[in-house]
Image (tube, rainbow, N blue to C red; front, side, top):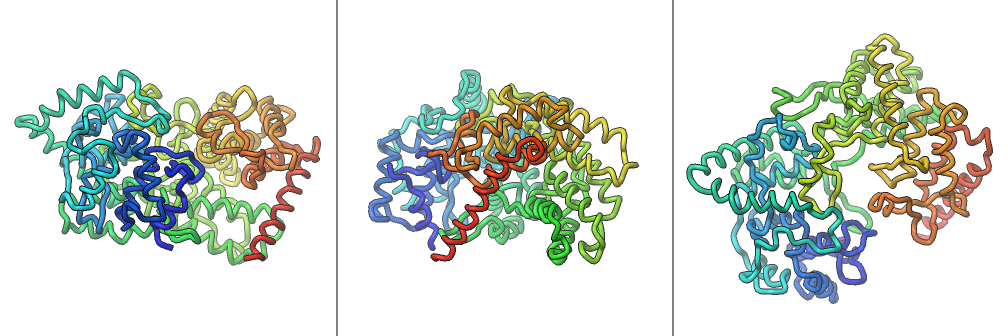
Length: 582
């Protein structure tokens, strides 16, 4: 199925597109999907009226000047024909400044970009380079057409100064505070004019050199995969802007396929190059929790080999402080060895899996991971703990929550720094607690780390007994990790008020069907919300049941578990029946 057909299938009834497939229409989703379809060859009146409806939605909501800041950037640098043309359907003056000079600031400043969460940092790094260059390619007929189609007034009459802070109400999840508007206006009207002219332009040249240097470092240390798909394509564009015939650009091209995949409903691009390590580690733990391990010996040997091959065995080269990188030797990434970015909970789950495999005979699971590599993993986990006892994702929390005041993204909240999370903290506790078979390595530090992490988990529990989960949907997911982390250190329903409250919370959310069904709206609104129609969901049900089982619910009253199991059992036959009708 052609990519444009898939985009049209995901169009909402009102003509727009959402931020995700269940979301209501937004300017971000609508404008970007419309531009994508046009670049893929759809005409302005194609798609049996779908393109007209999409354009009508955009224009009736103020036009593409109302797209959030990330969308302004994407429309500005959208590309076609393998990067041979860079789309100029939006003016750089309609974007708030992202000067590359920020990379020259002293790191001691709490707002230095090196202190940002790495996903945020690695997006604004290439964007700052492109902004500093003000690069725009040839103005082609497609560009001229889009300039007419995306805006309700003639392109030359658009007030780009107003457009800098314009944002459709449908997209305004995180409104700019006044402080941020003052900052952007000062940069736009005072600082940028100085940096665009001599002698300030000398500083701009140095800043651009620094930015592209960091871009190449990221590319080389991820084998041109990059941390995610957004900065992957932006870094690739930067390499092309620097030199269209460069070796760096050529090395980028084949790694686009790491992100592309074709499903039954069309071609898609992932936000990451996969979750292979995470899936493997959890699959191993699931298999080992059964009493049929020997039947899966071939699978376990392959998984063991993958776990070994995927562990990062060296830190990134050079001065890690200069490159704003955390240590990585001994860590596991979310996906593949080539990707290589270390993640705290992936390292923890990888360590748990190899520790469990090491207890099996080699003829079933293969040879165990060497002790020194286990210790490397422990060293990385210990290095991730923040002062408050919690664990963030890729790095330590490097700055303060007030930095969100300068979060320029209207559609994403809490992205500027790497916050500690209950999921990462729980995984770290479980991994370190599993080290009983290796009691000698940094034992006192491990014990102290577990104690601090346990206090952190207890301290961030909500008054209703839940934990907010940031990496899936949502309170069900977070509460599962909260409970399993506490159980791993010997807490139980009998001796832990936190576990008691958590169990009461989960039981209160069980549906009449026996399952649990939590909507993605819980993540957005930070209030527990059922799926529309009180529909259960298999994943939520599994997480809730796992938490309750760990907390000893079967010994107190197994009825809720039986009801949940019956829902899962019945669902299996529904799925099999559906598959049988295809």
